[in-house]
Image 1 (cartoon, rainbow, N blue to C red):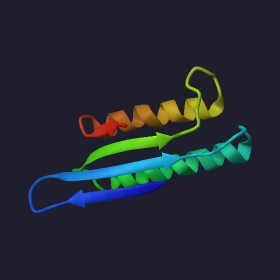
Image 2: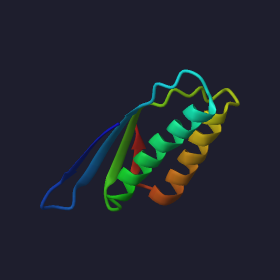
Image 3: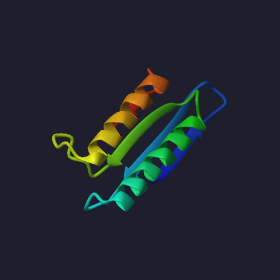
Length: 91
């Protein structure tokens, strides 16, 4: 994960968060690692509550399949939407 935060003397506050998760198989260990990566993203976003967030990258999840990591990512996105309404953009 890479995160960059820009702020200036004005009111422009922007954070870019790029994620690459390269989990190939879903195992109990990989689910824990996936959740850890998402919690790290959440932590970075929480550090800048007044910032516009641009979130991009590769989460290695097929949203059309009913896999554990799919549910974890969807739940994470709903949570993000609830706490960042109007300030998060996906790229």
